[in-house]
Image (tube, rainbow, N blue to C red; front, side, top):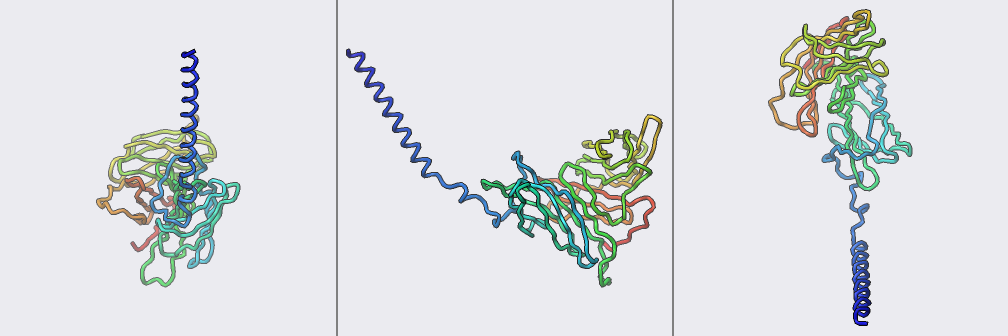
Length: 316
């Protein structure tokens, strides 16, 4: 009898303890702050937003075009993102515009382009729950410099390129009127960092393999991918200094095309000053753009004129 009574009392105490825990948990939940009230709003600062791996649809620039008179240019940008996301468009890390993607994640934007100033367009995306994600891609618009004596900008297209850390740069528009080409093979920009890591890229109208040379030495080989694009990525490969870089399209029956460009690997910058404006080295047949990365370090992009192009003389 005593054993049974002890068992009943134990069960009653356990039930009471469970009820006490449930009441305390309910009180704790009811007193939690509303996260949606404290979440960052699209009107708040985005300068400290970081790129994070969230598993959501990233912000991507799909198409970019430019139109208008030489002194009144307009950039038209289209892209995709997370559906219904609020997007803050930055120019040189300062807020330029706020837009919203539609329910399919499609967005578009027109912005006025200053005929003489460099533009660096990036997007920070705000999604439900207060999360903000800075896109990897940036659009650079770099106009041809002009001297103080000119009354209007030169009638030469600005450089427009899309770039992301660790990826090949896409050229939308070039002041050189095109890229170095030999028959079916085109050499695109050369991207490299301060450690010598490098990305070679380009296009070709034919299948095959592309071999890369630094001077007479072959340094890599890659196959042509889908859509006729090719790229080759290597770490700590390029030596300092100036030398010729060549791309060669090879097929089973021999070499079909070869493109060479006068490349120079620039020394790392000696200044630690953080800036959102890239450094540009303007030359008659080659431009080099150096920009700082959010996580530290720098990435360079070298673009080249076609072999038949006239020298592009600019005022630095």
